[in-house]
Length: 47
Image (cartoon, rainbow, N blue to C red; front, side):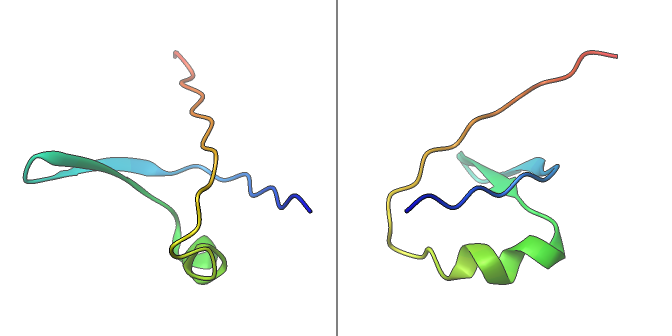
């Protein structure tokens, strides 16, 4: 089974780590994946 979520996120720095911060509507969905390994694809669009 594959679940695919597509959203725009912010990259924030906390101390030494960089985190991908999803929008609030996706935080509950991603919370269900806690502890699992996931694949992340980052697409940077240039202006």
